[in-house]
Structures are given as structure tokens and as C-alpha cells.
Image 1 (spheres, rainbow, N blue to C red):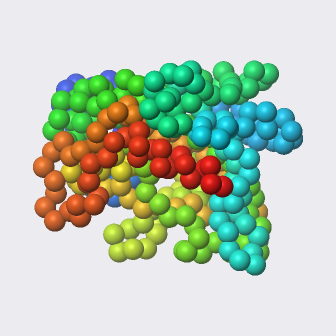
Image 2 (tube, one colour):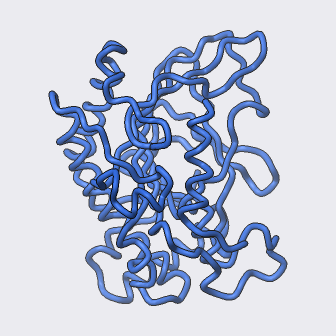
Length: 311
């Protein structure tokens, strides 16, 4: 079980209350890199509307989804079913997604500097999808801003430290659908796509059927089942760099259950594309220098996005 942090005192409490929450987050991020966050301030009706719209969209016939398909060199839009895992001689595990985010025109400098990470969202105009996810985006973006304040306080930095780096953010929301896995499909340790997140921090509404696994310090993986009323929040690579290695960007993976569809919503908070991400506090003694090597945010994210153009 991941640590559970009650975020309400940070949103509504005294300065001492807010600092106590920041310290709880610091402990979770330094030990595990993952935590559940409860009383996060995102209205349940916003969450439920997004979940309903998610299922309705992915249930559409393919010819109704393809008009919203992402363009080459851009990240946002519908991504048709692709192999999540592939093992020779076994049926692949498939997933599809729809990527949405802040409104940027194609010729906006942010869109150009982010090399496709930020691009116009081809919003559907004929059903509940667009209003549901614009509301969800706004609510979770606000939560991300507050979490970034908490992370700053947890590092002993001014709470607005990260705000100036997020004025032209490259954040994205992945609306995910893992198709029911064939019972004959192989999904072993070598093909479950264990990875670390590229961004600053991730706010995940996990699949109700489970499947998320987090790597322990001993190298084994522990299941992180959905916790009612909670988001899963994890430190990503850029926050690990900012923290000088104090906060762990932990390897994790998804093992989709057999025979059932899995849905999740993953908000990836990322800074402005020109941000030079480097340690803001003294590095942890003995930390692998490669883990906290400075990166330019836009270029770093672009390397990740380019993977989708090679699919």
C-alpha cells in the first residue's frame, strides 16, 4: 500500500497545517516516489462526468474516432489502438488514447518550442466529451498547481518557486483505454513497459480494475490498487532533478487484467518548454549524477513525443 496523504489541510488549513502536509509528501516522495492523495478538491461530479465521457468515446465505432486522430509531429488527439506489449507468437496487448490539454494555436511559440508536445486539441464537438474533459482539465490543473506549491515547501523552497516555470506549461492529459487482454497473451516482467515518467509530476486517476505496479527498492514490483476517493501522485524525472535526488522518480508499470477493459486518466504536469531543469537544492550524497543531469524541458519532452511518430 502506498502512503496516503490528506491534502485538505494544505488547501484550507493554517501555515503549520500546510507545512505538515508538505512534510508528509516529502517523506512519501523520498521513500517511495508514489502516494495516494485524498480530499484533493476535485469535485466528484467532475470526475464521474469525465469517466462517463471516456467510456462513451472509446465505445464509438472506429470511423467516428479517427476524425480526431493526432497529426504526425503533434501529440494531442486520438491515438488508435496500438501494441502496449508485444511478444513473438503471442497476441499483443492493445491500448488507445486521446491526449488533450491547454488551448494553443499551431503557430503559438509554445507549440513550436515544445516540438509537438503542446499542439491544438482536436476537440469533438458533438457530445459530452469536450465539456466533461475541459472541466476535468481545469480542476486537475488547479490541483497540480497546488501540489507544485506543496512540493516546493517540502524542499524548503518558496512555495511559488515552480509557478514561474508553469506559465506556459507543456502539461497533457492522457485519456486511456486498455482493451481487454487475451487470456493467451503473455505479459511478463520483460514486456510490461516498466518506465519512469518524463515530466515533473503525474496525477493519475487509476483504473478501477487495478493493474498499476510500483517497483520496490529491492527490485520487486508491488501492486498499487485503486483507493476510493484518491488520486495516485508520483514524482517524475524533472522533479527528481529539481530535488537533487531527494524525491524519487520511481519505475512503475501496468499489468492490465485479463479479460476486462481498463480505463485510466493520467495528467502529466510539465513546465514551460524553455525551462532548464537543474537541481534547486544540494544533491543527495552519492546520487547517480545521470539521474539529476540538467535538461531543457522542451527538448526532453520532444524526445518522448517522437516515439509516437515511429509507431
